[in-house]
Amino acid sequence: MSERSSEKQCSMVSASGMLSLASFVCLATLTNANAVEVQRTDNHWVVLETTNALHADGRLSWDFELKHPGRYVVQVISTGPFSLATVEVAGEQLKEVLKDSFVIEAGTVSDFKNSVTFNETGQHRLTIETAAALKQVRIVPHFSNSLGSGKFDNQWLTMHRSKEKQNAMAWFKQAKFGMFIHWGLYSQAGGIWKGTRIEKSPYPGPRVAEWLMSTFQIPRAEYGELAKTFCPDKSFATNIARLAKSAGMKYVVITSKHHDGFALFDSACSDFDIMDATPYKANAIKELYEACLAEGLEFGVYYSHGNDWRDGADGNFANVKRRNDALGIYTHPQGKNRWDPSPNTHAEYLESKAYPQIAELLKMMPRLRLIWFDGDGLVTEEQSFRFYKLVYDLNPNVLVNRRVGHGFGDYLDAGDNKIPSASDNLVKYWETCGTTNNSWGFKSYDDDWKSTRELLYYFIDIASKGGNYLLNVGPDGKGHVPKASADGLRAMGAWLKVNGDAIYGTSRWKVLHEGADETLLEGTGHRAAKGFSREFGTEDFWFTAKDNRVYAISLVAAGDTVRIRSLNKNAGTVKRVRLVGDDRPLIWKQTATELELDFRGVETTENGFAIEVLF
Image (cartoon, rainbow, N blue to C red; front, side, top):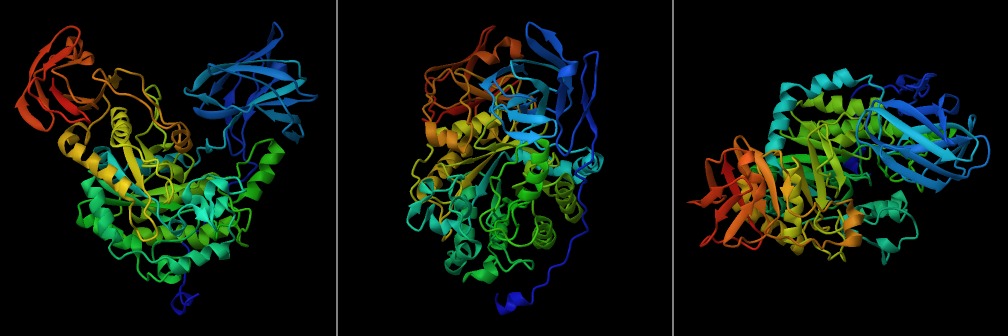
């Protein structure tokens, strides 16, 4: 601890209580004749008793009502040995030989390995066929699907619907494109610890570079030694802000504190920050904030509130696991420091560090646009709400993302490198965060860079579905963005300079795309393992809308004739057609089957073009 940091004092933001683990509310009821009450603990779950099942052809069936969509796990409770079981529910079939998982008072619990996604609330039917001596079938929210009691919903809704929040959301919907930055002590290591690449670590965990401390299970004191050599170039803030501007991005979000607990800003609540622990001796977050504002960019910060491997104990894992084991519910350990946890409790960490640091960030940057929380897995409903309310009370203009927990975010994220399907029914505005290679933090040997066309495809597909794209860069320890990553972003910026009208401020049209089926991203590991091999043709178009204008976007150069089927006469009467970025009139003809355009003499680039149609 430095002389300066020894004089630091940290004030509490407000008092906080804990939800009772024994609280129960009614979630759903069976709709069979012998209906029974279904209860829940901290997570909503449906309990189907065999005494209330319908019996037919050796199968048991129940009708039930589900109040919350999302991802669930089907559990079977038996009083005897398990055997092969087949379940049909929500249009899916699960079939496997079940194995003992938990022993609880009601019997032995076994989980089906594959989860089930309920896209709709309301009435559902579950059918099971098995020789096991069943007592219950339970439908339990997946650990990624945290649902609350509703206790704070009205208070949250009042804040979420405030004029300030809605004005902020209006800006967010216009912006469409932002830069994510994963940068910290781990950036110096480049995905390698003591000569071993993170993929070769003997421990389980994500193989992305910013998870270095966890995946190698590095002790807190040893990891902290990285701070002694962390000294970025003084030009990093200006360089990154200018790169984001040249890429056509409208906002920047940087990891002010990732899971490792290291703060890139001067904090009164911790010595493990860039001012006290490094030779840099400056507030990197504030420097980037000011550089972004100077370039006309809005600014946000990522903050890992639930996970803090330095000061957050075990992330509340032991407490939650003890309770969940008694209920027969799996507790996910990922992101929890169980190799060298700090001696305090997780609740004490929230009081002494997380809440106060959020207050520090808000007070330090009065024009902050959003806070991107992360690591919410074992944060309680009341704690999630307190984070949201803390932000609102200090600056109601700041947006909060989904990962604050328990549904209290102002907008959704589809997941890391995940793009929702055209058929998904998302209840809030949303964003996809993605990478330019296969890691978020700097990984020195990851040269699997996504091409400009691949990045543009993800961006255009997201825009056509009505979302934002938060595209990541992982600077090295000096703050330098890898050249291949920067070049890809600048190429996207060149495309947007011409075609930006088809992206910024647009919304979803009644038709999303025509041509080949969508190619979905299913996560960072999915793209890393399978690559990207999609081919694009002249028949592929994606659509966006703005007022009475519809945009058709192509990712290949045009031939002499362009035909767009979805803009036929049934779509409405076309008044004018123009090539976006070029005001020259186009010769066109609308028929019952298509909009036909004469492109002879019109030049387009290898990365395509956009058409604006005024109805």
